[in-house]
Image (cartoon, rainbow, N blue to C red; front, side, top):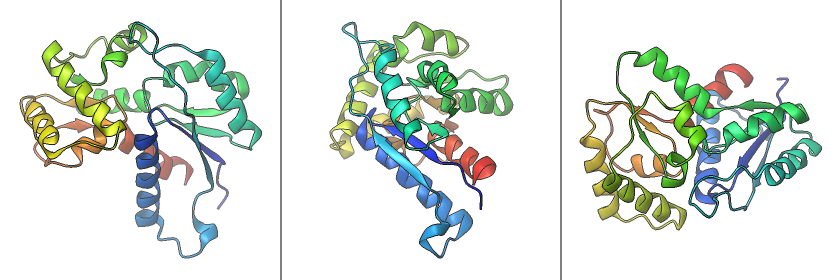
Length: 224
């Protein structure tokens, strides 16, 4: 199989990036049933431990930092890049174009999926305060709605708990209650920590748009 050299840019945050990588390998194993080690996909995971939020609490366009990370992956032979954190993928687009790496953008995939599956529905965005506070994110998701300030505080609490690998059952229950209040509305999980929370309660009656899953489905359908 002629596979690309895949780079996974994680670290935004670390727990979510590693979880995404594990989910990708699980999905690949189920879909392809590899028997030998060399039948698994070749990829490089880069846990880019760098702060990406500015003093105002918004995602910061730290182009130099991101360029350094992408160039390091390119120098290792990476030609296709995914980043589980959709908060920074728009910034990555210009950089990957400049260095000649294909970017698989989870937010673009999510928007396309929503247009196909929920063309006439309102969509609510669950994300961190820093993400929803970014002007570029608001412009990309201008047709969607956002939680109330009180709901946003709860989401941020859950996101921070996942980053510490310490999300309690009580907090998961609170997020489940919040999600259930949007049972008639598709929910876009625009933060890489939130899928780890949503996996811990029943979402079968909800319309959840998970960029993690969309990226993995794209990788399996188009590259592997």
